Length: 141
Image (cartoon, rainbow, N blue to C red; front, side, top):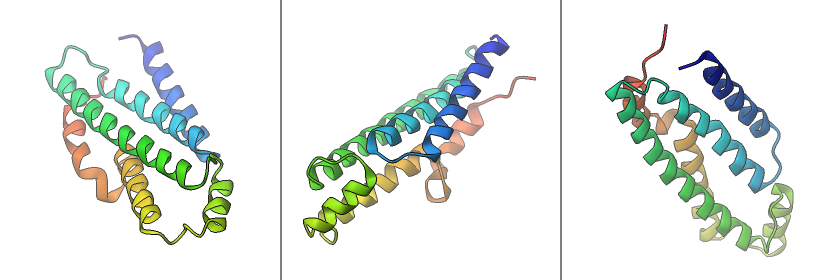
C-alpha cells in the first residue's frame, strides 16, 4: 500500500476527532463518529494480504455496524422525545419543558447512546471486544 493512503486515513480520522471535539447537534455527532471510526476500520485492514488482518477488519466492521445502528436508533428516540430538535441544548430544553427528563424512556435512551458511543470509541468497559482487532492488525515497518 502507498504511504499516501495511510496518511489520508490518519488525517481523516484526525478531522473526525476535531469535529467530534466541537459538536452541538446529533447529526454532527454521528457524522464525526462515523468519520473517526471508519478511518480506523480502514487502517485495521491496511495489510490486505494478511488473513488475521482481514479477520480483524471483519470483526471491527460487524461491531461498528451494530454500534452505529444502536446509536442512530437511540438518536431517533431522543429526537422524537424532544419534539423534533437536533441541537443538544434545544433537546435539553425540550425535555425539561415536556417534563420527560426523568422518564424511564429517556434513561434507557441515554444508556444505549452511551453503549453505542462506547463500542465506537472503546473506552474502559467496552474495550474487551477490540482485543481481537488489535491481535489481527500488523504494523507496517
